[in-house]
Length: 423
Image: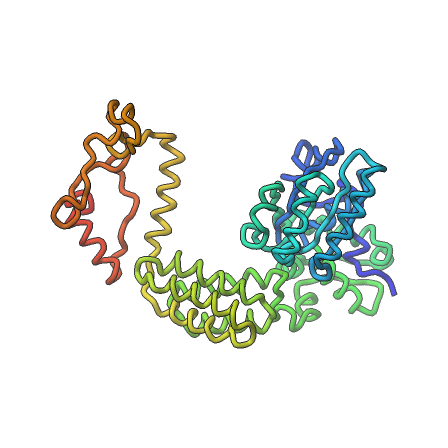
């Protein structure tokens, strides 16, 4: 039985590699690393089928350096330590550190990641990790701080079409057929920027045709896939489409739709922590100050899932999902922090006003630190007007209330305290 088309078409060199020009194009950071032979530890983050594993294998082929591979799905702490020991012994035969590639590094537990730290720190191995999940959530901070992070993007339409044409023209089996690409819309849409999925679909369509001549049309692709577009693929395009529909249903206050999309994820085998994490984000971003209890409930649901496990964890997830969808909505906190960050980027390092600074020494007090500060608790209602923003942005408004019932009370309190500033 022959290899799958996706494996037969796997690039062996950077010249064969398609996409990710921001990383491997002429003068780009990874291209320079490979060309100079000096590789530092890094993590590749991106959706499935965009070339993370392939890029690591190309590095292994290009460099005269021992190369070890571990899969986070099948390896434990024992296997990690064994590989590190082999890498330490191989240092006698190479001046460069052996490379350790870990696929799906986000699946490594904290203890497994901790076991890597010392080896990466001391240069026993150069770590290359690949992940489809946000490393900020899935990789421990000490390990992440010792690695550069490179983000891989879904392949563009032009990249995918180039890959199809290359497969049709050069693959040892496909070039024996008379293949005509009449329409490409369905091929590209169902691949979702995933090169592996694209080649799998192409192989399925071609092999389903009995004659030597194959004319690929959108109708042919749809008929051959049949149930595939309706399935939930937690590693592909539908993953991103369904989580988007889930979040937008909560934001749009439709609990039935939110439950439906959550059930699609559950039945598709999605990680419950992934769902819980998105609920926490939604509570902060979309419900916000309109109902601060939403964030508390979403956090409680996350904790409950961790404690209960599965399938019981689906119940607190459903409770949080319904509560968020039926809560009043406000993104004023989300907009406020984004406005504040943008203002900081535009205004530079404005000094803290003297009256807001601490004066722990006599010298600081003598030059005016803390001088003129009004302690709010010394005044009626625990408030007195004074300037808290730096010169140059003293009148800037960053938070704009959206007047949901609870937020309206907060807004009216600001009007009572600050008057015209908040009107």
